Image 1 (cartoon, rainbow, N blue to C red):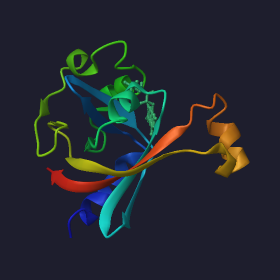
Image 2: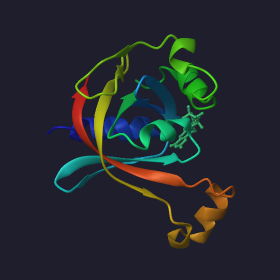
Image 3: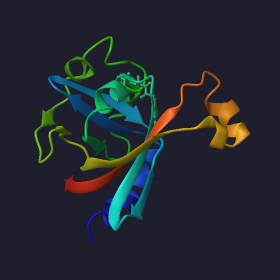
Image 4: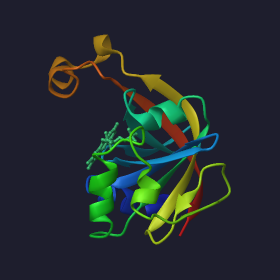
Length: 161
Ligand SMILES: Cc1cc2nc3c(=O)[nH]c(=O)nc-3n(C[C@H](O)[C@H](O)[C@H](O)COP(=O)(O)O)c2cc1C
């Protein structure tokens, strides 16, 4: 069934890192994501990705409807994952810097070549974490600077292998 096979691979790779590709107008950016979930809501296969509001990626995403998740094969792209997870697109063009090869797909956001697969995603729902509803320990541990994540729920509309 669409997305079930990839959900396992996505979850397996998740903590090792995947790429979140965003685009707004003529600006395209890539950041590393290591948290997320996969599920079935509203009769759709849905991924949820928490993106902190401080990320340049969020700036690009906030008024858009699509993003791509590029999932590398185990053990591949480690240098690029590290780079995209420690540098901001505000300061440099990570795509140029790493000579990443992007291709246009079926959504207005491109996908990455040479990875295991790409999930083309359409945002269905988003919500910023409300600290009042957050278990205290998680708040202290992960948000001491109050840079809360926005939880992006998105339908997987296409998988590119
Ligand atoms: C392994 C790894 C996983 C990460 N996972 C996330 C994540 O799930 N959500 C998030 O907001 N930032 C995450 N980050 C941090 C961003 O990738 C990092 O802040 C990046 O520089 C943001 O880039 P941008 O400003 O170009 O958007 C992760 C970083 C690494 C190294």
